[in-house]
Amino acid sequence: MSGKMKTPLKAKISVPAAVFCVTLAGQVFHSSVVFEVFDESYISYSLIIALISYFIIDFITASGLLQRKILFIKLLTVYFALLVITNRFLLPRLHLPGSIYVLQLMTTVLLIVVVVICDNLLKSKNNFKFIQNVIQVPPKYLRPRPILFILETVFRLFPVPEPVALYKVGSPHKSSPVIVTGNYELTVRRVAKSLRGLDCWLLVCDSRGINVWCSTLSGHFSERDIINAFELMNVSEYASSGRFILPQLCAPGVDIREINQKTGLSAVFGPVYSENIRKFISQARDVSKIRNVKFDLRDRVEMAIGSPMILTGVLLFIYLFIDLSRLFYILPGLYSISVLLAVLYPYRPLKRIPLWASLWLIIITGGILGFTIFTGLFHPTPSIGIAVTVGIGTFYLINEFEGWSPLVKYNFRSMYRGVEVPEININEELCSGCGLCTDVCPKGVFIIKEGTSKVINAAECIECSACYSRCPKEAIKHSSDKREKDVRSGVYCKM
Ligand code: SF4
Ligand code: SF4
Image (cartoon, rainbow, N blue to C red; front, side, top):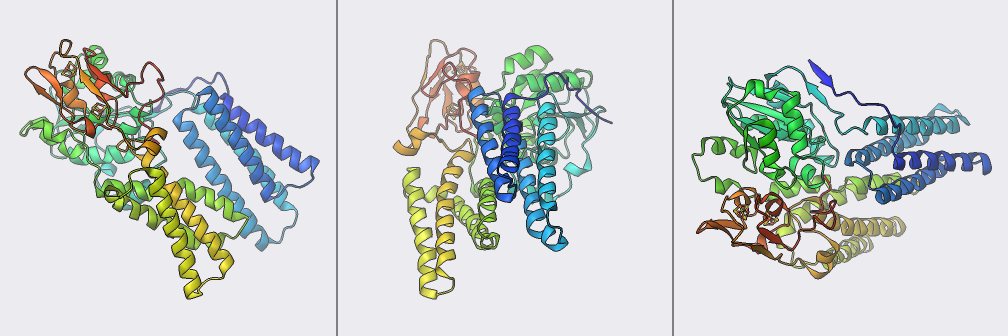
């Protein structure tokens, strides 16, 4: 029932991944043959050097797919976990002196082999699975899956791709609407649940297992992916006259005119949240009310739970050489602080990130040290380390948090000078009053008045680029329009 797009196996490995493997192999060879030492610290040191080389080359060549970067993080997490388990827990119990080197060497070779294979498979952007038959939405999307939800929240940096598919919802016919979504598991589940009781089609497209907004803003989801899914699933055979409803948040990267041309359907941008699709289809309410994106407590807390993940990996590595047991104090502390920061986010008194982060660095570090000194609970040396780690970790988390969502404007200028209100001007001679800018803007910046678009709320703009990218008349002049300067820029978004 499910298939897989064939990937041509031509070039075997990308340049950054090749540099990674060669550097790692060279380092390992150097440390084991030249120094005749090959232990946990050497291999980890080698890995860091290899990883730095990878990211430098990846940055210089700009060749890395987001999936490849994520893959590296996943592989290295597994690699560290294997090293820790082997060295710290397994070998001391097995009493097999000497075998540690063989095991570490094997783990390193295995890592290189897996990197080469996965890197090769990821070379094709169309390396996705798809469901060949048109079936009803599978029950797995409709029932609650709390454990999966928790994992997806904690590891939200990792893509969770679902197969590309065309699903039936209820008893759809040729003129039923087609709801388009990305193939991030959580997104498919949320959309499928909101469609219950309707008669429509659900087209799941390849957004690389990432949520639609982040995927489109980071250049991983475009009209090509929607047209590909449309053609692959033969949608025109099942739905030929209904509305083709795209997620509103894909507007920055999806050219709706191209979709109309290639599919013959009439595509429109739907609402921001899937729970409003029903209202959108029935048009029982003013749809402008369901165009705005929120950044409410739930969104912030979900983000905050996933935010310390990279930091956790780094700390695991650092404390491998110090004392892993200290992480029992540090990690719960950092996760709690992350959630606290998310709760307090709208009420923070200092809007400049370095000041806000420094304030917390002082509060946290001073607080833990003061608590330790006055209560005498911990030995001073570890508690200084714990306090400094949690303080620096908090500083990092604040900076991380600012870059996690497209909803937070984040760049070096805004970090130090504060957020500036963008300049948005409409050329009324060009504007046709089509209203597309009001449809795609997630912050309600425009209204249509007297036949043309007017800017009513520039301060709310989060520089998502949707309005000026989609305006069919190129009537919007926006101070953050960098399309001609740097196609890779845009809103900084990590997912
Ligand atoms: S999208 Fe462009 S042409 Fe259409 S209303 Fe907005 S500014 Fe005018
Ligand atoms: S006005 Fe700002 S927030 Fe609205 S669509 Fe344009 S860039 Fe995005």
